[in-house]
Length: 196
Image (cartoon, rainbow, N blue to C red; front, side, top):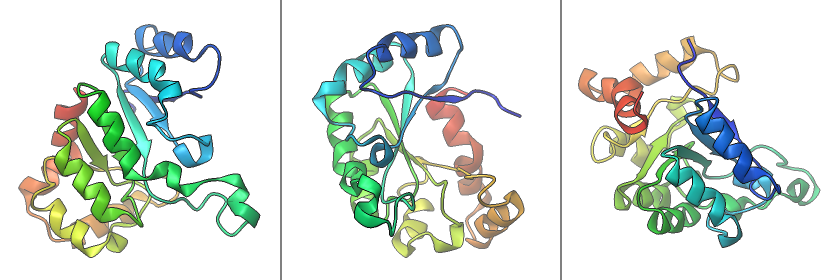
């Protein structure tokens, strides 16, 4: 069942502020999802701060992809995509500049997993969802930190239909986390963080 949805908005469009306001106030969207690599911008680019100011004022959240992507991989010039746009340092600065904005990092953040972990731990308004990767391939330190110091920051994400739920759920169970940690990751953290 779909409870709420994330919108996608191109920050450089002339009417992005109007569209963002409409999505939150009229349609009840949860917030906005940004894919910095494919949208060709970094979230700490101050040209787009008016959009983040509005999202913050509306009490909505943002989800920002962090780490590399398979899109454009192996193509000449990576199809023009700059993977550095999805570096966690951009989220670090955005979180510092907008301390009340709820920011959810999407995916494990490879190859910058340790830096992504540092941002999640350092910034109280930054959280992390784990879609896009099969759980058995999560980096080792991340697997350890999710059951320890990150357990109140991590949220389940499926990336369905790329990976079937049966596989994802089986691999999460195989990580061997306690029921308490699994409840946080699978629903309690999202309920608390996103107000679901």
